[in-house]
Image (cartoon, rainbow over all chains, first blue to last red; front, top):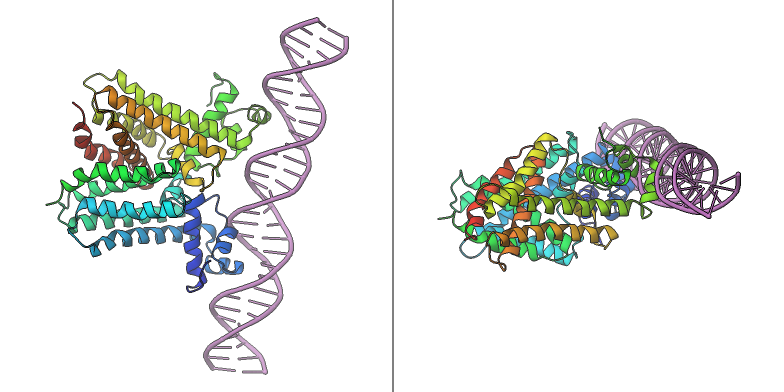
Length: 195
Length: 195
DNA sequence: CGACTACTATGACGATTGTCATACCGAGCG
DNA sequence: CGCTCGGTATGACAATCGTCATAGTAGTCG
């Protein structure tokens, strides 16, 4: 199941991210995480003296970095890069994940954002930086392919918003249709911003 | 605080929706709902023999109906109706709500969707119909203003997705900027589909 | 060898959860 | 009057939660 190639601490962070994006923060118990990570229970309090908040926080920044890395991986694409191609690239990962995992898991940032109230918790700060990391990666990729720098942030916000909402609708419907829809509908608009 | 103009049962459903969209399903206890609704605790098990699932389910269909009613209320708008105007109409409600409530509350459907795993729970069925009700209302409004019937569903999915994602980003950033952004960026695309 | 550190193991704690069981109240009605 | 019935009021249940306290092992270094 969970290969022990990587140290237990990393596995716990990864498992926390996977469980959170499947069932939410509150529904994900610390005991569930250590079991899913196949890690010793005593190690949790050793590696995460900050408790559950620290674990969830690190899972969020891991997610943000992962998303940013995936966005940046669009560079290795063969063929002419375009904003619509980047958006399709982002959506493809989710289509595969949703179908392969049978709509069990969604976006960890969405799950965390939905459960945190108005207050400022230590978790929310990490959520903010994770989202910022992701969006920044999209902006960088857009300007790299020639989109005007003052135009890119708005487009990135639109892309992330549409993708996030489509993920939610896809999960609700148990159908990846919304992902295809937003890609198709948004493509002409996105490509009209590149040279 | 909570006027007793309406029967306790309705107040509980409403309070459940408000608490769920603020803190999520798991973080919302049954005791919290009855307290927020200023309702007698014994009445909960009387009106909702199905337990928490029934309460959350009814809160979801209430939310779906509310969203659909708000979309339909665009009819009373003075001035020329347009797809972009409808989208701005939908976003305006959220801008006001987020700022007035200081980003305490998000979308109840998003909160529920994020916490439900892959399985089919009785709650998920209600979530599905609520989302369908909302999207259907958008489609009806679009065709009413002249959008081609085979084009409307795709646009509605795009609008709902972008709005939902923007709500999440706005909550994370504590800034309604994303709402404005998606409205601005999407307006030309939306209006290019109306006569 | 002994001491020290990194990591693991286990049991218990108080709090909170959803749900159930039981009893009480007041009006309607024969 | 007595009886029913929609609604209310508590108290307790088992389960689970995050966290803590304490003791154990393994390995390294002096």
